[in-house]
Image (cartoon, rainbow, N blue to C red; front, side, top):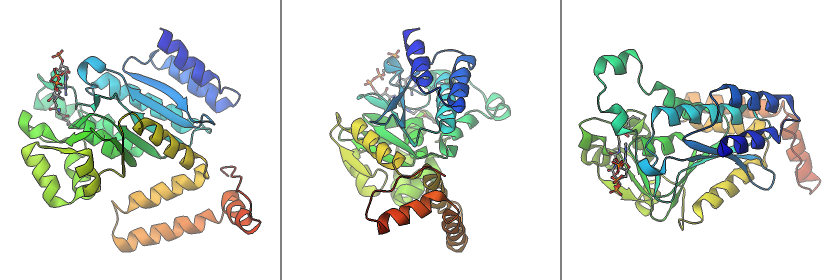
Length: 291
Ligand code: HXC
């Protein structure tokens, strides 16, 4: 109950704007308090949304309830005009040890297929605002897939990444075979998916899976700092930039370049593009208004 009140209070701190009132209302109406995650705002300007997975006894195994709550928190941050970036993290021992095996153990094909099992996980990859994963400890199976749905991965020195589904007689089901292959190339992805072996944070950095490695006790703070840096830019233009980079995973080079050009042109319809260039010429810091 205390956690619920705190979350609601944090969201209500920002109820001056009507959209935020809606968020708070939704948080209340969407089933009460979060049981499996902690939701907060971080950064000097409180403009970084923060989601911490909070199932320590199960090493943050991603049960259905947790992923549903994650979707609700992400929706709230998407709608919140003050939030310019989101950080997702776990604990020092585990970012997430995978999808909840105990929850999956007795499922059959008919249930999985008819119910489109785990389809809602994809929500993380559909968020338009930039999302940073701050990974300490185990990022295994669905945990590694969750990190890869984020836009940037920062890792603690002792983080370990793997897709060990093969050891359970199954395969990755939330983008592991696709995103890992795009991130690290075929040979390493194939090796990880077929053996279930883990790689260290340092190996993950060398392979291009993570962008930075920090001491374990600094990674969350560094991710928040990165979020603040992003949130200090035009939030509108950040969404365009993210959309353009993500197009590289979906489109041919020619189509991607065409889309990038259209988005680049579109920035010239924004106040922020004008402000950014004017500020440069006037030798002052740009004051973006996200318009
Ligand atoms: C459910 C899990 C879990 C998981 C750990 N636990 N991982 N419960 N699902 N994925 C639980 C354990 O059952 C145990 O609870 C508690 O967390 C602590 O785990 P231990 O094994 O005792 O800890 P440790 O010895 O330190 O070993 C840590 C570990 C190991 C190496 C991470 O727990 C492990 O191998 N976990 C499974 C990793 C995995 O295979 N992940 C992929 C899942 S499949 P109790 O109550 O028993 O003590 C997947 C598919 C994704 O992710 C497909 C689409 C999303």
